[in-house]
Amino acid sequence: MIPPEPLKRESLPKDTVALAKFLIGKLVVREFLDGFASGRIVETEAYLTNDAASHSYRGPTPRNKVMFSAPGYAYIYLSYGVSYMLNVSGGEEGIGEGVLIRAAEPVSGIGIMRRLRGDVPIRDLMRGPGRLAKALSINLSQNGVDLCRKGPLWLVQGEKPVGEVGVSVRIGINRDAHRLLRFFERGSPFVSGPAFLNKSIASES
DNA sequence: CGGCTGATGATCT
DNA sequence: GATCATCAGCCGG
Image 1: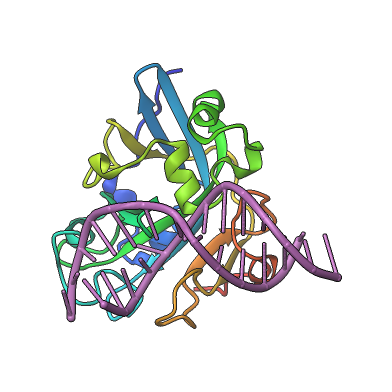
Image 2: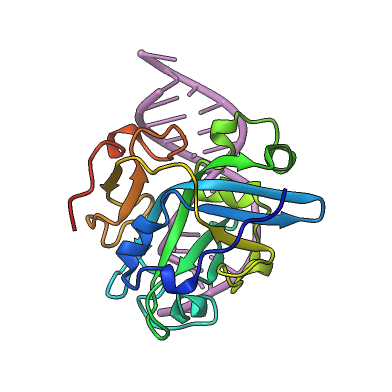
């Protein structure tokens, strides 16, 4: 398989909420020594400035500094000491925002991902941010990687048309918990989270 | 199914 | 020392 061309940074929406919606249907591609694996993004969450749930809320630190970079870089951190989370930096340089990639539909390299995740159903390979990272062997060594450039990890345009995009509150947070900053492809079986969150349709904007 | 809980470690206070 | 943007496994219905 010839790895497809990355998204151009200029094509990424400046607004981080718009970026979170934009990323639905895009592919995340991972390079391995013996091939590639990829998934079609079906669920994202936006983390903004003035957002108490965001790691960037209290300003830059060594961990979150990638959130303050230009758009399209990988912000990766370890959650609960157990799972890695993959985010795409958003907002202009100096603005601490990002988009958490929460789930994807496996597209290629399913054998590779099964080797990393165990003998789980395809539906569960990338359903949830920690599972997605594990399926792509993502860890801190990809933190700061340019996702708009071929390398260990990058983003490409998807081919399948995107269905209706739903919106809900974010999962697993307590502060600023009411904000509607989670986006997902309605009806996709590859979306994580409880069923009651996966119904509503995103309002026009 | 849905609900609960322990594991596990970096980060920041 | 407290706080987590989670997950797998176990339990009950």
